[in-house]
Every structure is written in C-alpha cells, then in structure tokens.
Length: 360
Image (cartoon, rainbow, N blue to C red; front, side, top):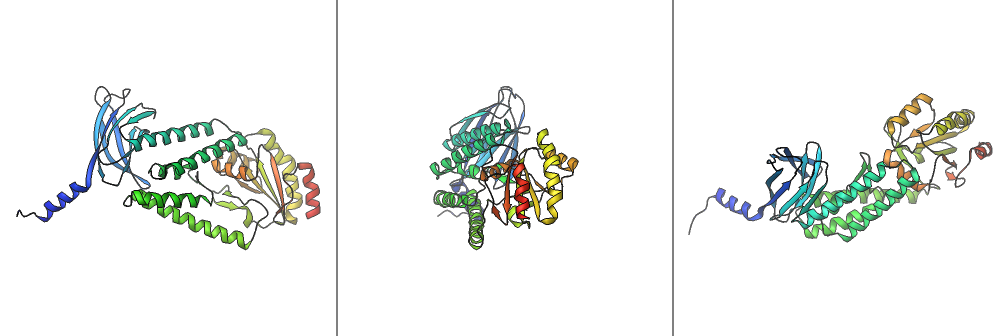
C-alpha cells in the first residue's frame, strides 16, 4: 500500500472540498484598465486581487470557492462596483459590464438573481433621490419594502436574500427597521441553514436574527408594561445622539413635522412656534421637531441660524418611517400630546394656543 505524508493527505482533502469558480468579464469601455476583485467577508471587504483587462476590455479570473459555501464576489472599476456575483464551486460566469455600474451576467443562476436584486435596489435609490416630497418618499419606501419582503419569502433557499435583508437606507437606518422584521430574519436564517449549514453568511444572518428577536422581546415587554397612546419615535438630534420621544418629560408635547428647505416653514418657526415655546415652556410645554428634509447639513444650518431652543431631530432617510407612523402627507403638520396621550389627529396653529391654555 502506498504511504501518504500528512501534508499530502491534507492537500488531497483540501482539493476534495474546494473548487474554483471562473469569471470572464468584459468591460469594452475600459481596455487595458485595472479592475479590483473583492470578496465579502460577512461585513467587510476582503481584497482578492487586482487584474488588468486586455486591449478589448476582457479578463478572466478564478476564485476559490469551497463546496457548499458560495461566495459573494464583487468587481470594481476605480471606485465603482461594476459586478456583483454569488459564486458556487464549479461556476463559469460571463459578465458584460460598463464603467458606470450596469452589467449583465450569465452562467450562474444565483449571480443572475443577485443582479436583479442590485438593479431593484438601484431603481429604489434613484427614486428616493428624485423626490423631496415626504408623502412620495413614504410611498416609494413602503412599496420597495413590500417588494423586498415578497422576494425574501419567495426565495428562502437562495443566499441572495441576505443582501436584501441587510440593506441600509443610510448609515444609521436599515431598510428592515421594524421590530417584527425579526420574524422574517429568523425564518430566512433557519431555512438557509438547512441548505448551506457551513456558510459564514448564514451564520451571520442567524446571529442578526437572534439579536432582533431579543430586541423584539424587550419591546414587547415594554409595551406590556406601559402602553403608549401615540407612536414612539427615536431620531438623531443635532449632536447625532438619538432622542426618544417617550423618554421626554413634558406635560404637553408638540410633535412637529416640518421642512427646513422651505422658507415659509422657517418663518413659521420664528413667528408662531418660538413665541408659544417662550410663553409655555416653563409650564411644561416642549416641541419635538422632526425635519423631513433629508439634507442634514441644511437642517443643522437652519437650526443654528434660528437658534431654535426646542428639541430638533433629523434621521435622514429614516424620517420616512416617522412620517408613515403619523400618516403625514405634507408639512408643516403638528400633533399635540397631553400627558402622554394624543389629543387629536392633527392640530392647527390657531387651535394650539387654546389647547395649551387648557392643559397648562
């Protein structure tokens, strides 16, 4: 019988469980250019290699992929991601891309699905950037959120649900930001664990599902302990720290939705809200002002310039959920909380003085 060294045996075992995936990528408008290939290592980029296209903009590259453990691999031209791939052992993928981020992929069913996910996310981002109307932004967000939930439920055995579930509206706001989304995360993690039990991506999803389940449980306990008479909000203040509406101590609280880019609403701050705040604040009146302008720099500049003394918050794209919770379709819109209860669906500036006089 032939004897094998430990090193040779290890090499054979490695070869038995590892196989390559081949990428043939063509970028016609980038001949003789450098492309960067990166792999997603749970939540960080891992540089695999830099390759150079030939005179026709074509290059081939092989990625090591362990059997049963597909890899998310991304190709960049300068700072632009020009291809997103989900590669399984033995895949032979062809990609046609341009330098602006548009691409088509063939030869890998999972990569083709991931391309569709990418395209859908890109359309959503474009739609969100094209409007500043809170009602339109809210409708766009809700429609996309529902589409993503549908995708996850219809593709439970595909790893492409993972980038869908981990999408961000901005650096502070996940697309899936409701407590009950924990149920969707758990269902996806448990199903994928039966298909890819060794995948580090699935293990990361399982960890996130557990975290969300813990938060959901805590939220349920809080709601059971003390039922609120209004939708609670927690958005970043001018110092970047979150300010939670339910944690504020005020007998009368005006929840005020406004737009700092609108000149008339800026004047409303000084002509209407400031005199009311100065008159009633010492008696227990406070204002929680949510700016629905997603440009935080504009908002911060207005707050500083007008020296607004009340609580000012702006969650960027996270404002969409706040507006949805209060069914806000335009600005300015105000709601008055008296002793922790919503006194009316909405309140006009003319009625506010009377309500404050009654309460304070």
